[in-house]
Length: 310
Image 1 (cartoon, helix red, strand yellow):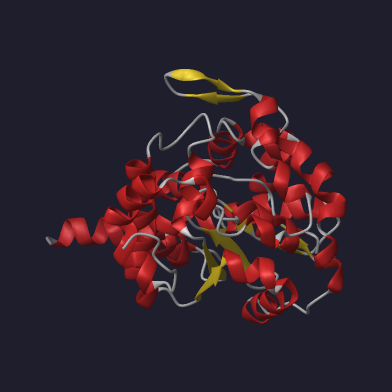
Image 2 (tube, helix red, strand yellow):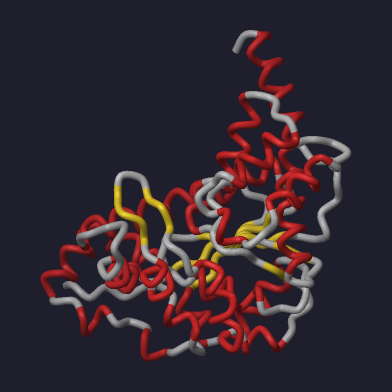
């Protein structure tokens, strides 16, 4: 690498680093879509000190943009406000612009923290986190800018994930596509994990069967006192999920309707149900199980899941 290019990279990274002190470790819930990330988000968000918005998606893009060029406070705010997920947060655009204008040091980390702080203050809370499944591929980038990030990778039996995928109006449309996505995302995360300072895996099935025990482990991981009100997350789930009750624009496709978005998380409004574990055993044919496991079988076995094909 020549000196000029190395100097540009060093300068760009300095622009990303924050100077403000975060209020505490920030949980970032991630994983393959339909693996229980929303369920875990609602449980953590029920804690009286912790606010977790719906999916952000813009954070890695924001970091990349600032790696390429300097931005004014208003340009940084507008980048977020113009993202398609912005309306889900129900924040005042001018309030975000004002936060950014008042930053002592205008950099990516402090701007991202200011967004999360604005959201958590609206909820009357002091700590914040994130729940965006796709950040399972961005852990190293996020860690570099937000060292307080603590990644909670939730993993679910891929065959149950596939059943859920195929019910959606987005994403994988076949068992093979779902299996490939499941293997790729989990493998990518596990390859990054040795270089991620704060990383833990949680299996969805354990969260359902031993909710309190898993939540206590997570609270220890993010340095947050456990509160039993987290078990009553479903009492506020409807209210929290209503944030996303709007049509979501999509590139080259019709918008995802508000009704479809709400329906996709219908079960997260209920207490955990063990009868929904291992549904693939009754809902997939032997031929479908074999097709799925031909791709994902080795990883299923590695993660401790029993194979259905022989």
